[in-house]
Structures are given as structure tokens and as C-alpha cells.
Length: 74
Figure 1 (tube, helix red, strand yellow):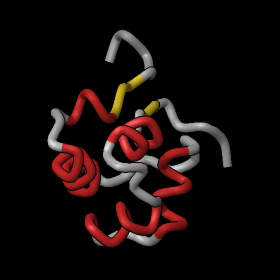
Figure 2 (cartoon, helix red, strand yellow):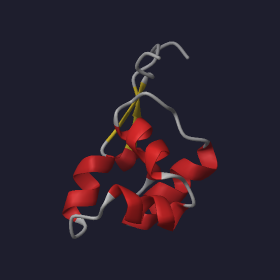
Figure 3 (cartoon, one colour):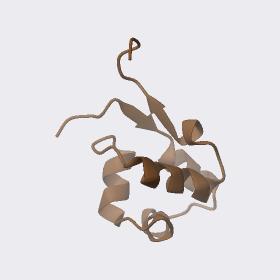
């Protein structure tokens, strides 16, 4: 599976928030650790609901966590 056009700052945000583990984040947003890993690595795009839950955990706007690198004409 290739990279998605969505980049994220989850790893950075985890470390800025007390070196939160992938498992701790997964538990807080209701996902598996494997899903968090895939999202961090850009191999999986989360649902909109999951994306908002991740941003909420860090207390930041969605666009701080996720950036879309798709076509500029969309």
C-alpha cells in the first residue's frame, strides 16, 4: 500500500505531550495501535471522525494534525 496524500504531525504531537505512546493515543481515540502506526506512517487515512478525535486529544485544530497534499485544484 502506498502513501496517502495526507501528511500528519502525530508523532511530533505525541512527543510534545509527555512522550505519549502509540498505545495510549489509540486507547484515547478508540483505535488500535496498528492503526495509529499506519496513520503516522502515511499508509492509512483516518476517517473524519477519527481525525477529529486525534486532534481533540492534543487540543489542537484538525489542520495542525493533518495536512492534505493532494491536487491543488480540488
